[in-house]
Length: 66
Image 1 (tube, one colour):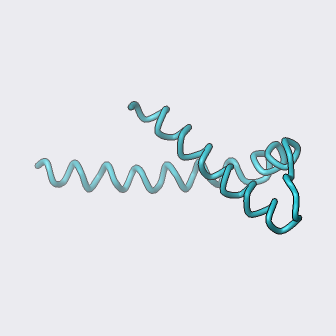
Image 2 (cartoon, one colour):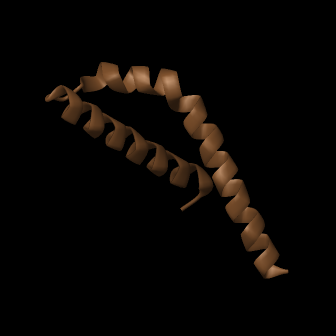
């Protein structure tokens, strides 16, 4: 699995979890509009956190391989 596929899988998982939590809060499926708004509102933050976490993981892996 390449980095892009891993990123997409983790982003989809994040969206599903957020959608489930919102559905529990509302008592119904929040729908596609919720997903669009979530990505607009928080997608950039997710991307930055993902890149920061995985950059740190890569640095640790590189140090172990030295």
